[in-house]
Image (cartoon, rainbow, N blue to C red; front, side):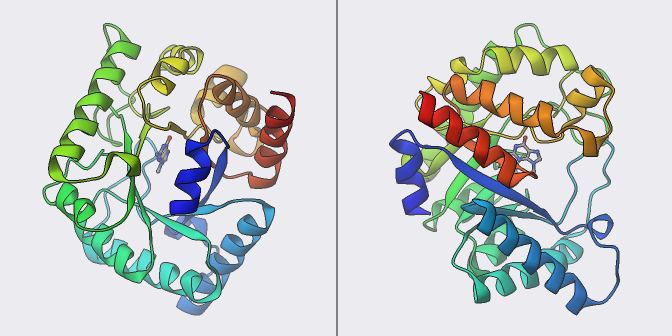
Length: 271
Ligand code: 9MG
């Protein structure tokens, strides 16, 4: 993870490949098949250019139901351990539960990606006591209801203030400032108009002094804008990544690794 932090700090981009280990992401049953499938997908994304694999066992999509601690642990820990056995790719754990963070770190994760920005009791402590990177994301509400009626007076200002406050809590708890990423949280309690404002004003997050991670890949904002189903959002997702890159974002959480890497290589070559 240190190499990745250095790379981003020196202005280069990094792609994080998404590996969801929720039941709907596997067509077959059996533990072996699930692990084999997850490992193959992770290795393929690494080959395509992902330097971090973000593993999540609880869906954060709008309307998604919470998952118990045991269930989440059973989904993600064997996958992390298996990937760690076969590859040196950096692993990020996508969770809001401190127990899952701790177990994932023990199994080989070196980053915590928390859409809840380490709000759960004990989460700050888990991350402060280990050499891990953290991503603090903004969201309004929770996945069950967050898209019902999001409200902001000044969305950019509110999210900037929120992220600055969360960074400050992290630093007070002992998390090293150089290990912190921030993320405006596209789609998490945001209307289409809100998401477009955030993308337009991305620079305002990139000048806060912490590297910015963006998750735009296949998001429903592209469905709302273009009327495209989830599997038809590649061009919009990649274009949005380029818009974010132009304003200073350097860490990209994506499904389509090869295509995003091509776009970002072009950006870097031109700029
Ligand atoms: C887990 N997850 C889903 N969407 C995300 C986003 O936009 N950012 C981050 N950091 N994580 C996300």
